Length: 177
Image (tube, rainbow, N blue to C red):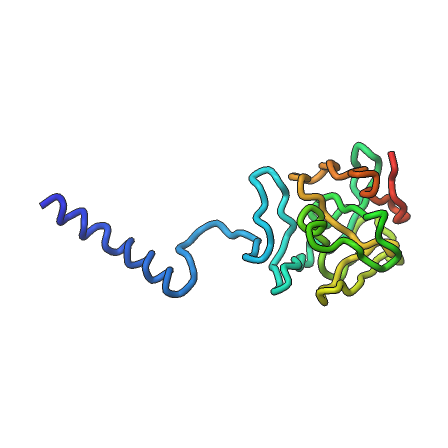
């Protein structure tokens, strides 16, 4: 009798799981912002805000695209609207990104057109079209990226990686401290 009661109680849950498998959706679960084509973040790594496109490039939401200045251990630096540190790549040239392939796994671009938040210079905001057709935010002509190991606002762990990745100051100049 107990086995039959257990089977009857488990039946509805099993139906939900099976129906979810058929429709491609999952039962209620915490929202995640990742895609099948983008690498899964580690438990400690920050995953840039995204709704990924077919190319794997992440489109940031409007709040994230509102660039602003934030105090950091390196002084005031440009961050996204949620306070995550943004970096420039010294091998890029004005309005051109050279970070491709595996580089983008470690340094995801800030995708979208930036808007002005507190402290930034509106005349420095811009965007470029990447090789995959996505739009990448720029500041003072520098394409902007996140560092995979920055887990929370205020982290600047990508500063000076390989002597080519730097945060930007209000003027859009690399901070090389």
